[in-house]
Amino acid sequence: MSNKHNQQVNPPPPMEELSPKKTSPNIPSTKKSMASAFSLVEPMEFLYIRIVKGKDPCELENDTDTFKTYVEVRIGNYRAITKPVEKTANPEWNQVFAFSKERIHTFFIEILMKKKDKEGEGVKGRLIFDVNEAPKRVPPDSPLAPQWYILEDLGGVCVKEELMVAVWMGTQADEAFTEAWNLDAAGVSYEDVVNTKAKVYMSPKLWYLRVNVIQAQNLEIANKNKKAEVFVKAVFGDAMARTKFSTSKNVLSPMWNEDLMFVAAEPFEHLLVLTVVTKVGNNEEVVGKCVIHLGKLERRLGSKPVDARWYSLERPGENCKIQLRASLDGGYHVLDETARHSSDTRPTVRQLWKQEIGVLELGILNATGLPQMKMRSGHQGRTDAY
Image (cartoon, rainbow, N blue to C red; front, side):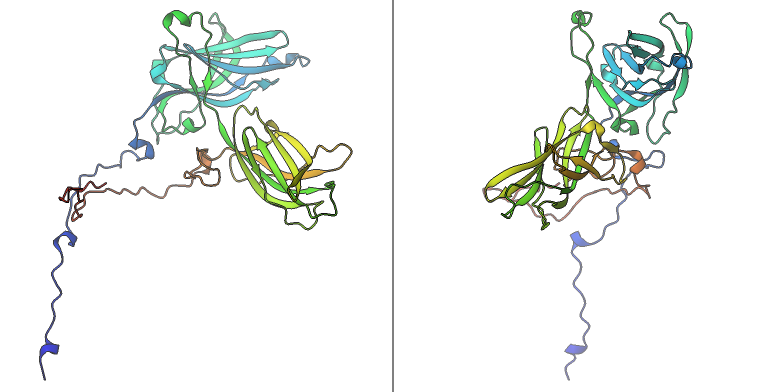
């Protein structure tokens, strides 16, 4: 019997480029500071000013007067104004303004609390801060807590009003950056500044406008004997979207339960127009229409469900109506992409962030054994790998 079957066959030696190698990369430690996505980009410095709320104990002495209270921030040729709050002794704003540090050419921040009534506007008190004394904050440092400050009149005498404010210097990595109003000023020469009124250019706050079209009732269709297909068309500004045809057998009470998405920017100047349309063959007929002002819609930052509401359709003398769930969603980034296919699903609102479980560091060191690229002349060339 041959001994060939009893001989031990040794495996071939491994290729040198595929064999494991011991490496000792010099990777900097991140124990002292938590790494973030903003570590990869050049930091931009911003002056943040958060206007929280105010106190005015003498404001409600005359209950018959109607007035509005707001705060104005002035930094050189920059001007920012909070939303006005109706008659109250304890107005709340909780608004953040961000000023690019490289464009600030003054040493002082002037914050004015103002009142507007039927007789005009007036300054109730002001605060003065030094830009160079603003503390610096770099995440993950704790956010700067706002403090109460007693206001002074234009002559420097203390008044009874108070204002809760926080002022600090940070970068675009600050959590407040996503909610802050970013301001800019007109680029004018020094000679023209004295003759030019300060202008405010606010980056628009973008929201997703979500409209869930549920159903309609009591529709009046002219061609009842023919099979009509019913759909809803929504128009917002220059954008238009429509539902599919209703699958309900009852064309007088069709159902859709379909979402339509738009992007809306503050201030909400455009109207949302919904039109119920029937189609028979190539002919389309408008059954009813309703117009919705975005200021009346609920604004939500989380996944809280929105209550369904009935809206009357503009059909005089008839009881046509449509049921919707409409809301403005501001909890997530609004990107230059289709609303249904967003590449960035991380919420902008910090309360919605999931708790981190750790930091994963991955370093690409080198690569060996890559094939060389061929040149057009047939000669071998180097590999341009990335």
